[in-house]
Image 1 (cartoon, rainbow, N blue to C red):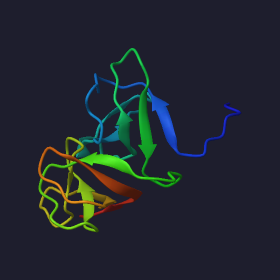
Image 2 (image 1 turned 120 degrees about the vertical axis):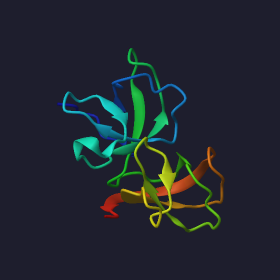
Image 3 (image 1 turned 90 degrees about the horizontal axis):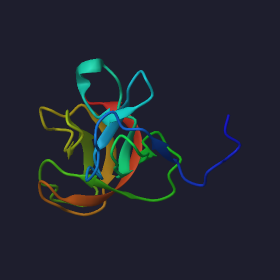
Length: 132
């Protein structure tokens, strides 16, 4: 058991596959303790957002969605966010979209700036809530 306590819930995890360059993507924890980009196929909730992605030989830094983060993170957009303050949801593949989109699975962030598909924008994270 770790005696370390943190001021922010950003934790190191071994990725299941190479997550280099995947900053801002939402991940889940696999049954073996590794992380992978979010997919609804296993019926799991999203766990966190990649802050620093790495290959399988290193640890990837993940900001936890359920609280404990004192600041903001960058999230990867799949579609345009037109207004700061819009809620964001994760879709299969780990990118963020608006909760009204048909492929939205869990609302878990709020945009703090605008952006277009493929961009990283600043957001606040919160506990995942199902959109279905």
